[in-house]
Image 1 (cartoon, rainbow, N blue to C red):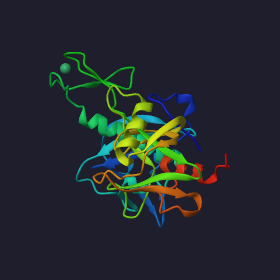
Image 2: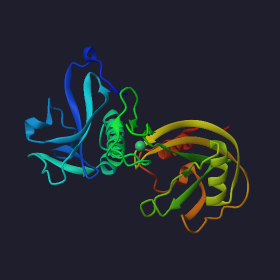
Image 3: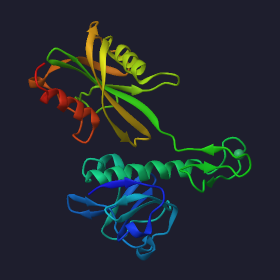
Image 4: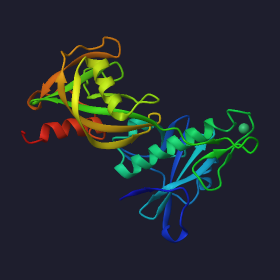
Length: 273
Ligand SMILES: [Zn+2]
């Protein structure tokens, strides 16, 4: 199973019934199959009396077209289905479906919040060839917003730097992360965030990997780095606790679906230098 994000579908590639990522107030419509969760797969939502807005082809999964759309605010879920917050579903869906659902949520939110030109207030239209909206009056083009954020595993000997923030569930630790500011390189952002949040200087940055994170519109860019100096000191506002942890003594960690967890798993599984 593999999700391919694409704007237009190529008819010859589409052989299967489409998947529908249908949202109502940021909550996704799913089938209830006991503990298992599945995405509605049907020729058309109208067949189950669901009328939709902002329909968009967002890609395909193994020959199944994937569509995002909004349901009216008062619409009730058909029998056997319910609405659920995407964040809750992210770790229970197969990865290609979770990625498609994330793209669906982001594009739908962007379509819904850019119906009018921010410069001249004229209703916007979809751009005919690009993933963009365009104002027919002043030609302003609006692309979907993506907010880059860095996330970094800082290593000192056989220990990793972990922090507990206000955003995380009680008791859960993670690696340092933060949003990139205008005019900043990724390297500068890593150095600034680690210093601001923990008082630690870093060196030897190395790119690790990335993850689209649609809560609401982030792209997480993962790095590893080495300790270069300083004493750990939580900033006391965003960061409640910070410290060094060895692989044999790790605290409660983020879910396996997150790049944060992949960074900690990389640390825990790496061979000694
Ligand atoms: Zn305009």
